[in-house]
Amino acid sequence: MNRTSLDKSKIKIVLVEGVHDSAVETMQRAGYTQIVRHAKSLSSEQLRTEIADCHMLGIRSRTQVSAQDLASSPKLIAIGCFCIGTNQVDLTQAMTLGIPVFNAPYSNTRSVAELVLGEAILLQRRIPEKNAAAHLGHWIKSADGAHEIRGKTLGIIGYGNIGTQLSVMAESLGMRVIFHDIVTKLPLGNARQVSLLELLRSSDVITLHVPENDSTTHLIGPAELAQLKPNCVLINTARGKVVDLAALESALDHGKLKGAAIDVFPLEPRADDEPFENPLRRFDNVLLTPHIGGSTVEAQENIGREVAEKLVQYSDQGSTVGAVNFPEVALAAHPDQHRLLHIHHNRPGVLSEINRVFSANAINILGQYLQTNSTVGYVVIDVDREYSDLALQKIRQVDGTIRCRILW
Figure 1 (tube, one colour):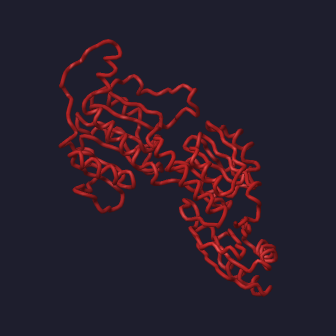
Figure 2: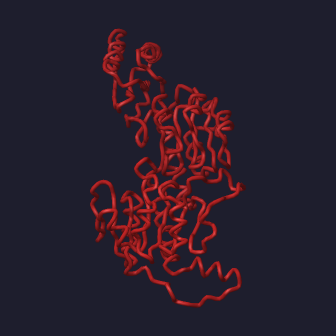
Figure 3: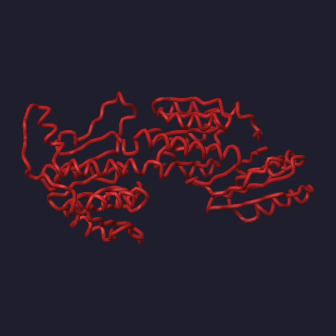
């Protein structure tokens, strides 16, 4: 069996926020045994204590990894976000320190899409209000305002992995689908790409599937809510800051839309025993869920396996395929050779200097692959085993080196 330069029993992996057992099983099958698990998210102080001597970190959406946290973990080589989003990590600082960050961009798309469709049906039937009334002992047996979703228009903002799968599922239920995206996308089925304004004015159900950045913060605010049809419902399973909740509260107060379903919030409790405070709690026609769009057993099992495999591949072979902040490099494994992984600042002359080191010391390169982005370069080099210690010693001295390690 292949060994890494650091024995796997000495590689510490920290998993927080109840990462699924499938991740642990995947890592253990690969030979990793020093796995520390936490059921909840950690405060910044707790996190720094845990990762001070940690080699790989696994988190979900609650744990925030700042530049200061990263600076306090000199052994950290990789981070796995066991979710879709990665905005909880300072990606730029991680890249600068030579730490690739991996996620699972596809594993929970079905779970999110199913939740959106379920909420759309419930809101169009006015089930949340009738459920709340029934719990209070009131019997509202009325069809007023209750509609099928067949024949209704679904407006999808963000036609990516989730948006496209939702589009197909919605059409199979008889919905018309329109979507808005900042780039031109090939529609699936009978879906049609439209402007944001047309989507807002035409949709019976609007659902958001966009990342959180400066351009999407309060993407849905007072002006956008004013364009909605009175019987429209709004669903947000994307990011908490995409919808202006104060504006949504006002629109609901004034009956500007039929209802809403919100799964993500600007401020969320760090643990299940913390109170959830939100102005939308008082509305019976609003479904509030605790950031569970991708929280199904199936999704979490798939995510655990996918991200764990990426961490194992990076630790064992140096593969960065799937990293969100790092040049993607992969070479097939060569058991009889030693592999050098060199991360450096992307500036002219670094690769030439690396190759000069090999030439000057008569070290034959058996395989080499370089990839760069605007900030860093990552080169994977396979050499004969008898020269690997010398090669590692020499290329660590190359000006511009961020970090370097060896695998065998």
